[in-house]
Image (cartoon, rainbow, N blue to C red; front, side, top):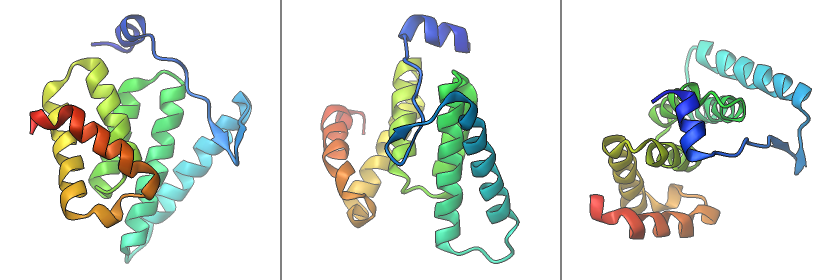
Length: 148
């Protein structure tokens, strides 16, 4: 399914980039993109990486994906969300965004894979889930737990 087909059939609203609670104007989105990309490259080139570095790299990739999503480049956004989850599988924001995109694309295999990751995190590593996402995780598992 192409990007134009996704936007045509699913009517996804464009994303508003926010920084410190304020909406970022269109020209400044480029600055956020460049900063996220540069931070990712710096961390990637670091010799000895810690767990925090992988989390930061995952956050940078998530931010890059958000910017691609705001530009309606959904295929690139999904790739970056996947890389984000691959680097740091506890990135709940990226998992939820992947669930959203896979549901819209009717990709049951990858949707189920993301639900399994979410279930594994919820059952074995609940302390890694930020408190503001616990109810969302519970609701998602309640709605789609039958796929496990």
